[in-house]
Image (cartoon, rainbow, N blue to C red; front, side, top):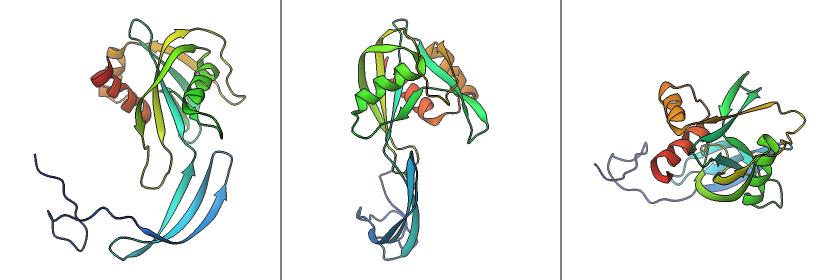
Length: 194
């Protein structure tokens, strides 16, 4: 395997380049909503080129991998308006202001599924779209599950289903599990956690 190298328009392939940050020349907020805001930054790239970048600013989200004693994993199916379809995915939701990530994970698990977990621990941290979104996703394994009453938000219509790890791996291979955070977390668990 070859070594790590960077290529830029003014650089020959294979030469190294220091990892420098862009310099922000000007920033303005274009939109502020309840879930995210959008800002526009005018920046000078490390090579000196001045560009405009639109950035979606998001507080961050938690993702849960609810694991039963037999190794099966709980997924939820819900309608995603932006896509116009329903998807199977892991439990997830945003971290509220002042809320710890483990508390957000426990809250989302109860809201979406009704389950509580004796233990939640972080296994992974993801950047879902680092080119223009500040959101981080913290993935938690949830074990010691006990069933309770779901408390979905008013606009959530959610179905829950247990899947074996083998069935989920097949869904991923066939391309029938489309949610990126779920694919990443399940494959991470399959490869490094079980």
